[in-house]
Length: 208
Image (cartoon, rainbow, N blue to C red):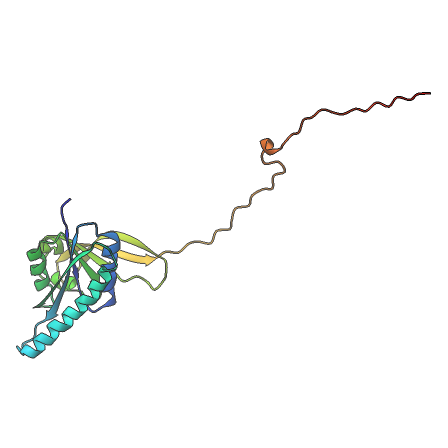
């Protein structure tokens, strides 16, 4: 069995943790390698102290994601923390360099895949792998998962991007009255035990 390389984008948002948990429960199989990728922003200031602080903060964030992976036995993980743009260019470079088969990302309003769509016709072809975008579930205890292929058109642009979107939606059950079971006098005739025995007859003899 070939070892698959699954890259999970690490961001300090709840939906990013949800995406990792979904991948661990539904995508990961024995022998797969999970790469926790965090890209911290680059600034014009080249302060070494500031860059070191951002790198350390990103590594600590990735460690918290790794703690989620430790709950699953035999899970192989690695952490990659690097500096780059927030438009998805650096993430795409790292995904191609790693040779990932699947990219898992939490889908929110400021996701990089929306920005990437402005400069590329197809997200999947640019990353050279499958892209799974996980949406944040509604705050209910019981959920169901719907997977669909999405194509999003950006306004004032002819650019489209397609990816596999995983929607975790609430699962509701209709109220159904229990069926009425008619009362049966004799549900099973074979369940009746018949006793068959000899009838005892007593004779009385009167002697005068």
